[in-house]
Amino acid sequence: MSDLWSEITYYFANFDWLSLLDVALVTLVVFAVLMLARGTQAAMLLRGIILVVIVIALLTTFLQLPGFSWLLDRGLPALLISIPVIFAPELRRALERLGRAALAVNLGARETDVQPVIQALVSAAQRLSERRHGALMVIERQVGLKDYMDTGVRLDALITPELLLQIFYPNTPLHDGAAILKDDRVLAAGCVMPLTSSTILAEKQIGLRHRAALGITEASDAVAIVVSEETGIISVVHNGRMIRRLDADRLQHVLDAFYHPRGAARMDWLTRPFTRQGRKEGRGREAPGD
Image 1 (cartoon, rainbow, N blue to C red):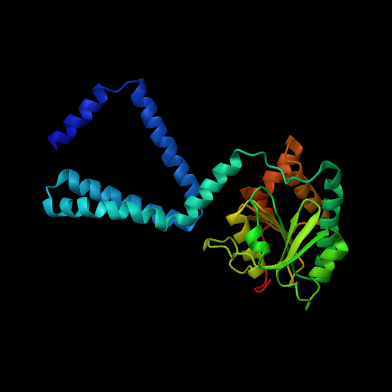
Image 2: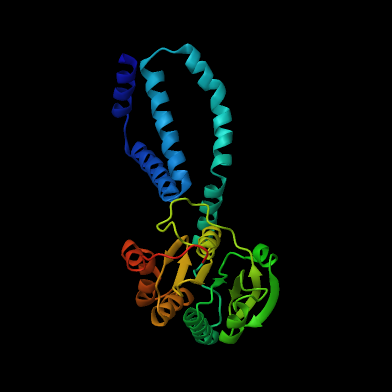
């Protein structure tokens, strides 16, 4: 105990501005890790690891346990190797976010083509909603979706409401999969999307289409438009967050925000749906199988 107090006294006696910078950097890294893990399965694992580290630190500091200390010395290298394996999906997602942060957030469509594309998507979603035809439209952004395109049928066709209505018409070969869009083109249809890996969902009754929309937006920076087959509710998903119960006007504003990320008014429509208040407004219940 006296050795611990001596070390604490020594550190405070030699504390300067460089030490303050060191502490600030460590705090920033820990805060960033906690923010990245928040709302994911990694949060519980990270909480357990922190608890184990605290218990081990207390035991090795206040008690003389040579056998336990020997076990820690031998087991620590294996633990350092296993952590990246356990947190592989979260680490990959964090690195992808850092890579995307260096790029301007833009769907890449030409300015003259933006409004016709938005109008076509809004019109198609509204008509699909009225007819209760389920649909999943995934808009590719900076992260390429070629791997998912290979699971479907390549089209490379101009985006029109009629084409989207035909793709998602019930009992047609492509209606169960997702349509991948980029710029003003439908790149592929009938594509298989990854389901969300998160078990912490605001709504437990959402169906496979919504889980696939959450999954692809967790794995990339894509934006997904989902139309419920059971209720006709239109939803937009981005970055693993979902806003639901959109009408045509709100859907147009949200899509306009994604195609034109610059500007305060447009950014309000971009960020508000994924805030706590926006999610509260869009909260609803979907039937299983959507």
